[in-house]
Length: 251
Image 1 (cartoon, rainbow, N blue to C red):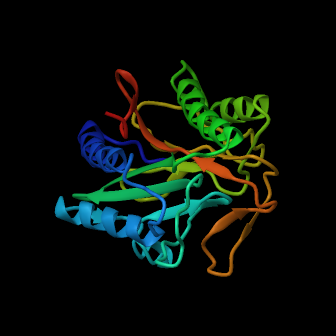
Image 2 (cartoon, rainbow, N blue to C red):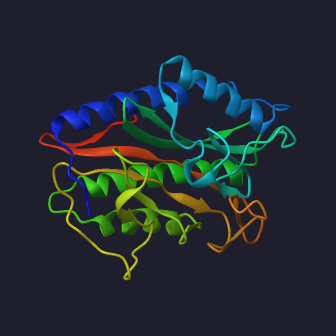
């Protein structure tokens, strides 16, 4: 069931999202070669609790960290570890959720560390573009949820990439995962509701350099590309207000 949010609830989610945007902004230039993914998680956890909020991912369905940190071929849900060291040329996807006064924000960015290959830079840039293509599609009059995935998939394929099939965007705001599901392609087995005022959801393209197929590591969380090629991930929480679509997780 899709939960339509009130203006008061959207304001609470907005505050949480602005906090998350500030945190993700602060990571630019902070992620460097030699750091561990646990260093990123520790920084984010401390940043959140100092602002009297809670990391919403921590212990969610058993996830053991505040932050999902995924490197190169790791698409999503990477578990931070002191043994996982970041190197020059890596791309690092950071996916974060904050619970601020009961309101949930969700956003992700992929950061380029040092000197990455041109093909990897293209992947990151196209994935970011896919996010805004999806947002643009969602903002059109009479748009439906599947219009988002259509726009994301079309732009990724036009640039020689593919999209994640097994995981998708979702409603958010009062819980971490709500209806509706928002695929990054046209999925005929999913519902296709019309987008309307009061909806709050996370659009999150996960774009692969190679095959869309994935596998899950033995930790039962980390999702990697089946062919070992890099993937990138960008995500925004958006709200449909009486003034139109608003990107909540962007200042």
